[in-house]
Amino acid sequence: MSKKSKISYKLGLPPAIARKVEKTGQTRGAEQDTIYQNRVNRNNTVIIPLSSWKLGIAPDKGFENGYIVIAHPEEYFSDTPPSASRSLPKDLTIGENLLVYYETRLQWNSYNPSQYKDWQSATSRKSPLGGQYVARVPNTTSKDDSLIRQGYIDSNSGGQGAGIRVYEYASSEEIKATRYQLSFLAWRTEGIMDIARDEGIENPDECKQKIDKECEDLGIADLQLLEKNRIIDSQKRAICPLCLKPILAQELASRVEQAEGRNVPDLTVTTANLFHIRELRAGEYNHCSYNLGWGHHHCNAAARDWGIERTLLWMEEILRNNGRTIELMEN
Image 1 (cartoon, one colour):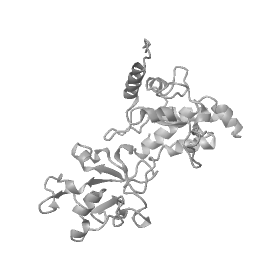
Image 2: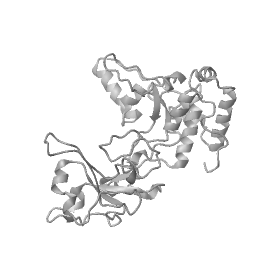
Image 3: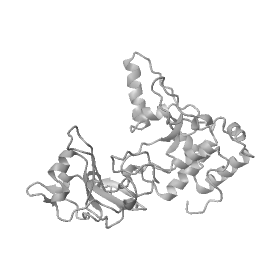
Image 4: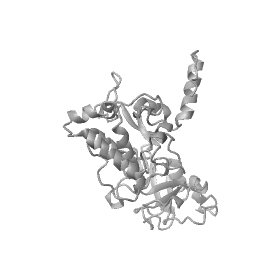
């Protein structure tokens, strides 16, 4: 994967699908009332909860843009009197790789940072962090309890959010590999050649061949492994990893149908989207080649953070509870 690619992963793809492949290298959306960045590259600074750190999720992954560990005030302070907890791991230092994170009104009132000498909200994602804490405390019904947003809220601190969720992390090399593999799969969706020609793309068959060759050179074109992982079928067509139906090229570009009366004008969700075979989970770094496919929006919503196998068991239970008979096919 260290070699320089000869062609773009976007080669020949209809613009809407090319943009979709590109966006897979970015994280999910994040609201301003969270500490996470909104749709940024997956190799950005990683946010690791202290509880996860203690379970062994440490920077041995080699995060390209570093990491920040966050501790709730109750974890950082001992109660009588409030002072740095002696139970903190020795490899964590406040203001260097550790921040206290306020997210409830009770935390803010009980351990208000103004009572600690020289405490400031953080301003940098690299050590030193420029402060000791970050706050995202929602407002309440009380007129005196307004929204509190301190740390990583403007251009002076690199924009909104302190970093990305640790389980969304992928290295720049892995981002590259997955984009090429997803392009490889997009060329195996039903109707892709017709759409490409309709978009005025010349020689789409030649474009597909070039992408195939590039993926072979990168070691990410193993059809048997893709089939084993439920990403393509025996006919080498891209399929939804959950329902196993072929993905239509049009589904990668068309907006999902909205229920009457519940439609919104700015919906950007498409009928088929990125699908993780093994769900994203802290410590596993599952945004990687041979673990990504194209799946239907509603199948993605059903699988949620459960993964395929747990989702199928849940579906079986629902069918049985509704008196439906399940016949298991032999391999």
